Each structure stands twice: as structure tokens, then as C-alpha cells.
Image (cartoon, rainbow, N blue to C red; front, top):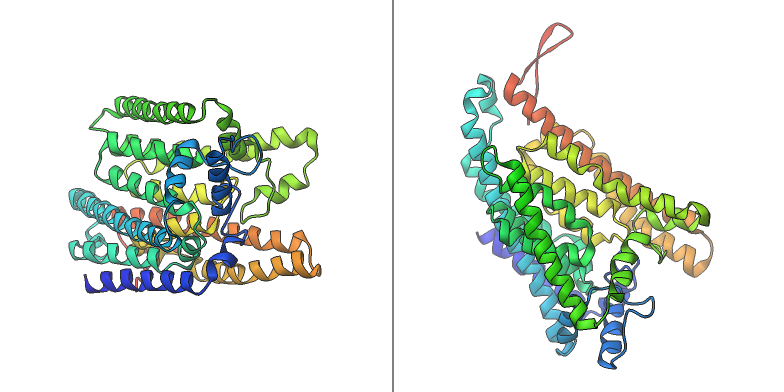
Length: 426
């Protein structure tokens, strides 16, 4: 517990220092951090138009939902220092919620191994999880979230990703507690803001299903989620008086009309795209993250935490307007798979690419936009490498889990070319 409070205190101090050092303005303009969907400057513009009784959805500036607009309008009435404290508090709350969610998830993983102990190989006890590890992993998650540079920058830039991460963490906590009503309610808020979290309906249905009642759980989960979503859409219509907001929110997410550069894969590809191919490839790009849901759910139906982590990572990689705040969220969950580290194959390469691209991205942006000594290809190369590193990381985790499951059932003694071998675990 002392290390937990140290992480919390250090995370708060770092954020407060960066706010008071004037980093907010510079970070809020970074394309890796602020996108057309989460920029605080666009929120201020939308709230200003609303206060003047003008629709913020008539132009192409504001893309938040009416529900979010009402919330942000109240926030903007606060003193700026108080507003900064709200963002810091949201990050701390997210860390606490993720800590509790991972604690429950890890307990379930340990219990599941205890229940399946008879089906494991006799040598598997060397790699099975121990109950004393339950207390350590959540502390690592807290530190991984509060001290993550991606999350810190997102908070100091005051992006709305801070609130999106809080809602998403609440969804995971409710899922861990197997509360269908609460998890679908939180998921409705999360998908209402950024659409892509809708794919988490699948792990929620699996987590809340009773024995041999999966189809019933799927029906109840979808029905509950649809009800909460309908209520949010109804509130949005009531607050704006029209359905125009759908085109400016979900339409912007799905059609990708704003090609402002970001860390994603959409902007460069569609900048170069011929108009008559635009619609086709938009469908292809948008369907891409969703086609993995069912195969992953079939393969990891007995491992809801891993399935949820994987889908969060897929969202951060393949969404139309990603930011480093989205990446930092699922990276904070990596300590949950600490027991899989011996099976990782590309951790060093992935770490190096993350470090290099994080440093090169602002440099190449400066060379492209300000000095004119580079072009869009240079910046896109860093975003492409960054996405590749994330894909390598995700596949490393999935393959490591598959190897781990294999060794639990067949033991860690291996036969290599007909000879006895031993998997070395450090």
C-alpha cells in the first residue's frame, strides 16, 4: 500500500507541476495528443456557440456528443485552476478504478487455475499463479497509469480522453464484478462518446453469462446496452432539438472527413485516396477492428480480462482518430500479464520502437510543418512504425498466453528434435 500512495502522490505532483509550468498550451496543440474529437479548444468553441443559442453542429469544429457538451459547459464555468484539478482527479479516479478491476480480474484468473489444477500437468505448478501475487499486480497497474507519459500528456493537454478513459475503466470494473446492468450502462456512455467501445458488448456478455446460458446472456446484454444507448440518444435529441448531432459525431468518426494528421492510419491513406474509392475503403477501414471480435471471443472465451485488453488495444490502434491517451490506457493494463513476460519474444524491439517513435514524432512534425525540410511521408512513417509496434505488442501477448496455456496442460519439459529439453523461466 505505501508504494501505491507514492505512485498516486508522484502522479499528482507531476501533473500539477506541468500545469503550473505552462505546458498546457504547447501540449494541447500536439496532434499526437489532441484530435478533432478530443481537443479541449474545440470543446470551448462548442460551449461558446451553445451559450449564444447557436448550434455547434452546424460547422465542422465540434464533434462531441450533446451529452458531453452539457457536462463540459458546466465544467467551463469553473475557475481554471479548479478545472485543472478536475482533470487530475479524473486521472487518479481512473487509476483507482483500474486497480480494483485488475485486482478482481487477477483473482478470477488465480481461482480459475485453482479449479483447473487437476487438468494441468504435474510440472505446471512451477508456472501457476500464486495468491500472494494478487496484491502486487494492481499496484503495478496504478503506477503504470499515473506515471505513464502518454496519460500524463493527455491530462495536461486537457483532452476529453481523460473522461473517456474514466468511463471505460468503470466499464471494466463493472464487467469484473459481473454486473450486466452497470457494465452496459457505462459502456453505453463510452460508446456514445467514441463509438468503438461497442465491441466490448461481447466480453460483457461472456463475463455475465451463467453456465450454458451464453445466448441468453448475449440477448440480455445487447438489450440492456440498446436501452441505455436509446436513452442517451433521446437526451441528446431533447437537448439539441434535432438529430443533426449524429452527422457531426458518429458521422465524423465513421466517414473520417477531417484529415488532420494524428497517430492513426486513416489520415494519410485517405489524403492520397481518389474520391471514387473513398467510400469503399472507408467501409474496409471501419470494419477492420470489428472483424477480430468474434474470432478472439471464440479463442479466449474463458479469459475475459485478456479479451477485454485485446479489444481495448485494437480500438486504440485502428480507430479513426486515435491519440496517445488511448494507447496509454491499455498499456496500463499490461502488468496484468506480468506472468507471461518469459514467453514474450519482441518486448525489447517493441520498447525501442515506442521510445524512438515517441521522440521522432514531434521532431519530424516540426521539420514538416515549420521548417519545410521534410514532408508528410516522414511523419507518417513514425505513425506507421508506432502502430506496428502496438500490433507486435498485442500479438506477443496473445501468443504468450497461448504458449502459457499449452505449458499448463503439457508441462514445461519439451522434446526438441527428439531430445529432452526444458523451457527456462527466469
